[in-house]
Length: 403
Image (cartoon, rainbow, N blue to C red; front, side, top):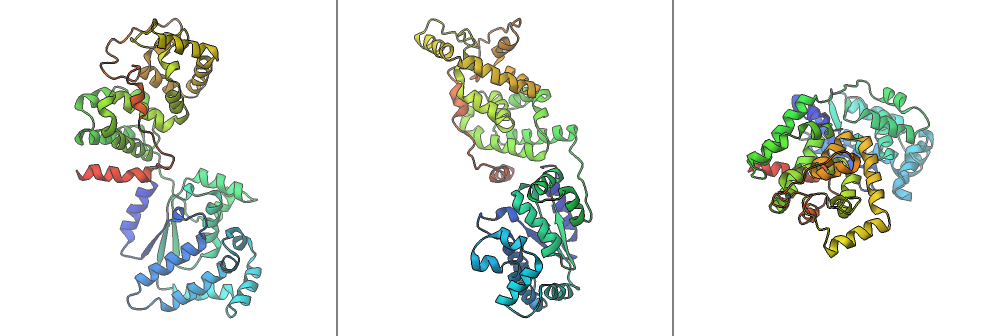
């Protein structure tokens, strides 16, 4: 996902837009009680109507409207039970149709539709299939391979092959891989982005932050020094867009009260290691105070009452030991995460490497680093909502380009 499928489709669409009718079908916009087949045929009918300036598609639209009834009479009468109609054998569907509508059979209507399409080629584009639910993925391929496999309608599909196969395996009694081979006649794999291309695009987005005064030139220079650590988290362009759109959203709100570099590094954890991010947010005391109650940084409050309370709380229920053990398991899964945490909390290294001694940073509070107790909370004032997605944030990306 995020490997350039949508960009490829956009390029293909542009190159053939004058040769055929192009319809973009977005099944992931369906509400929970919507019928995928209804939505497809409604969009197909609308496209034909909008492109029918000379009334050439009038009969085709009549056939399609009647055919649409074939695939949803049960839904119309008994409610939105999508699985019922899609799992009914065609002969039972014929019986239902004859009962409610009479006249032509399903196969005859399909022949009539194909005949009307003999002089009109239609490309139906369906993107992000891998983002659908398992059931809707099954319905999409059932639609393409059986329900709407009309002559001269060509389907251009974009999806993550492994995700779709896994989904089909769940929702069917036979091999998803074999089923996909029967439906898809030509499959083109898009090469994964190279590390050098990913780094180049990263620099492009970083430059965008600078151009829009969200970071300084010095910030850029310092941040690029961490490339060896952070670039390993990013897999594709979508990851880059999502990460930088979050920065576009949050930096204007927090940059005056945080260290920009630390915030950008923490956002990497927020995007790619959500559980660790939540662990950091909820365990300030464990991060700023070591196992022995020592602050992991230059600010030492060993004699303060507040520090004594913190130390008692940590030792009383073994929170610190649990915290460090959970963190250590995450480090074993991702060594880059460990390096990133050491960068944000340098003294943390002493916890996992007892023989290692890290010098205190006398400027940590002056620089508003996250390891300073007085600035830690500033990094978590704004948090990503449950419904935030890269689609929600893409608009911000557009806004910055227009400045």
